[in-house]
Amino acid sequence: MQPDEPTTVDELMDVLPSLSLRYAEVAAADPSTHDESAIAVIIAYQRKNRANLAEGIKPKRGKAASGPSKPIDLVALGLVKSVPTSVAPGLKRRI
Amino acid sequence: MNTTLAVNADSLMEEVRSPFLKGSNVQFAWDSTSLGYLKTCPRLYQYIMIEGYSNKEESIHLRFGIEYHQALQEYDLARAKGMDFDDALHHTITELHSRVWDWEPDRDTKAGGYKNRDSIFSVVVDYIDHFRDDPAKTLILDNGSPAVELSFRFELDWGPIPMQPYMLSGHLDRVVEFQDNLFVMDRKTTTIALGQYYFAQFEPNNQMTIYTLASQVVLDSPVKGVIIDAVQILKETPHRFVRGFTYRTEDQLQEWVDGLQYWFATAETYARENYWPMNDTACDKFGGCMFRGICSKSPQVRQAFLDSNFIKLAPEERWNPLKPR
Image (spheres, each protein chain N blue to C red):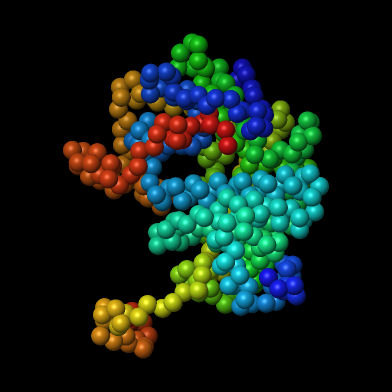
């Protein structure tokens, strides 16, 4: 952590999206490796997340909160020939 | 009730006894959970209390509930001891993180999707923020300690054998003063909507009646009833917190104790006959019994499915009303 980085809950709430990444790091980290701001990061992230949800901003699906996710390339894996870019409203994409 | 014992959990830390009479399946120490199993379905009671079966989803619900209750207990204690809001919150999340940082339930299960490390952090932070200026104040006991996570245990006037009276035990999350009355506060987590339908389940209700009865015995005070302190865990909107009230009159409490004699006698009969019949009208209750997939099989193959789909807990790991929290 750099000296000028935010450490309090209120300061941390203003630094999304880096807050999201820091939360993913500290939530799953051994507490013995924590720096002083780790718990403030958890609190700030949860408050920011609650504010986002109240405004209708939905969280990313899956395990986004546990770490950066990488989309699976189904074509490269040979599971499908191509991935459709859109589907008609009301229809589920079938692959 | 001839004997009462009202103490904080620390003083119940003696060696944990079996809740069953030695060498039998006759249970003498009961709590709302085990009595609830018996009342719901004797076969459910058999699978959990007698045989010790459990499943993965159940363990997620149990772990989440334990962490939620412990975190809010630590917060309540910190506040009751005079710690300010921010420090108490920081302390609570520090302790919670030290317990759950490596908890990784399978998020592909329904239970794990709602109840996991991220959601326990969010629901605890949200609860504490939501009730920052809580109108319900923790009761301070005569010995100066806050009435938080109070374990209770008391003997009844009769028992399965002359030397062993029946016992009722349990844990009260919190006793509070609210609008000049005393209430037990019981915390609940759920994924279903917190409307009239949700709160209707607590009246009548085995657990809430035991808590009202126990609090009156333990505190020797006219506790009015229970405040259901419920949170609906949500993924795409903020969690919802709603409190509901349920009251019990003296006559209702006495009626419940009278009925208990019949329930215990019935449990003794099941134990002595070594047979716990299935109540097939209860299989769809509470979102569906976890053993429905077992009971729906032919009796000849049931054991094989039990062994492959469930884990059998060691006796010391099983639900035990005498185990302190």
